Length: 583
Ligand code: ATP
Ligand code: MG
Image (cartoon, rainbow, N blue to C red; front, side, top):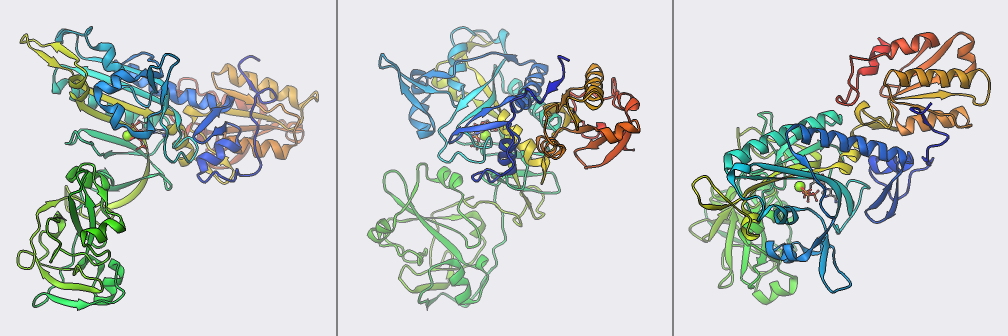
């Protein structure tokens, strides 16, 4: 029985108790089901069953990449520092980039991503527009020294990523590859059984709508998403914030004694107005030390990415720096700021005629400070983190919120790397041009965790067929006898002959232990073979997804499960494939 997975031989140490530091279901259950083990913060080993799932996820990703014409390669995990100096990222990447020096004193890094390396491979050798586009990818371990590795595979330091890179002569060609890759990413999610959404993401310094993230929806996902019934969806880090600010109008400006009032909530309560009528102030400095105060609607938070776009490299002032600059924490306002302090306000405040703000004096606020009369604003910008209830930028309806796990991202890079690293080709018109590039990443190990996040219950994992460690587990309730085990073995072999992936729990464990482990590991279908059932010629078939059970004559099982030609286990999540048994 070479094709049957024998649980007596498989190294899958299951745990009865929840590991104490595992907060998320995926983290907890992958450990408990004996699929992986932690070696250090953000470092995990995949054990045999976990490895099977990971390999299936990887195969889905690789197949979809091959299908759109990308070619698989393998680059070194360790990369020379030199090329990172060329792109400027040796300095920009920060402490997430793990650096090392070899015995000769030459610097290297552990690859967190491979734009530099791939660019260094094609430059000087890929020379003519006639050879373009070129699309290469690899599926390989990455290392990022994450500040807070957590949630198991979700945010590891070492993790498996599929990273692809494309080189083009024209923007149209890049757009085509970008769209095809987006479609492939959608299919990958579908095949893994993920419920997902494509969202507008932050495009960093490049700007424009040139990047999309694929989010697996999950209650405990790290990413916040806003979405609208019109189809608009964005990562809350990136989405435009259009909100409703409640006008609070008065006859004129009035300075009010507000003892003990320092927060927006306290001010709103003191003035008996909604927090949406108060303006939050945040003091920041640029790398040269020039000070700016940002004003945003009181019920919103500053989005650091957006703020960084307005003041690159900004930092918040410390309490001491505020005192030094003559600013009053908890009482800042645009009226009467110290000389040289700039005011930049959120665009949503443009139409707000009168502001409730600090008076730049401890214990005082202004109510009704008039924009354009009592104070001026030096600049307007989209500064706030969008949240549910804000307006959709595309249709004006109110946005809903959700949480998600970023499983993949597509990105139009433009010429950032080709220009900085001198990667040029000869175009049709005889001129040298930098390659227009795209890059595309899938978190393979994170996707595996996302599948568990979406498909589990109190008892354990519920694998979609396409990524299950095996499709069916045959469970003989006694082993070593001459009735039950032989019947189970024969059945397992017959099912395997149908092309179904079969495991047999041939361990000499109590029935209760086998049932619990089968539910925990999450085989999509269990076939229980016991003495009592066999006496009547029956086995019990249990669908993990619903818990439904049915007695089936032993002789009928193979017929019932003969899906040949109907279900392609490898290319469909196939949740419902086994449902037919229960109709
Ligand atoms: P995040 O914002 O979650 O840190 P990222 O945007 O920095 O991720 P990318 O550079 O886009 O990540 O990498 C491509 C994919 O690799 C991501 O979409 C994600 O699925 C996966 N990934 C990134 N960081 C990690 C990590 N620390 N652990 C596991 N998977 C990761
Ligand atoms: Mg990303």
